[in-house]
Length: 102
Image (cartoon, rainbow, N blue to C red):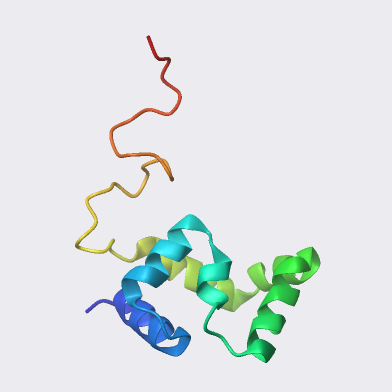
């Protein structure tokens, strides 16, 4: 199990959801699915950070965030995924969302 899978397992256990459901919510950017099982106090803390642009900017500029992003970008993709790392999001693999239809 690689470090990304371990992180996913740990996070999903703490959030009370399956790793597959967590990964799906993360890929879709659907925070409501992720926050649904959290206690109200933690949920409010996360929502307040997400609603505060300067807090997000400060967080993303932190050395810890840079290190985490570096690790995530260099981690091997999930072995079950056959979608290339650079494939467009939210489009079926192999389809060009910019191609003109006949």
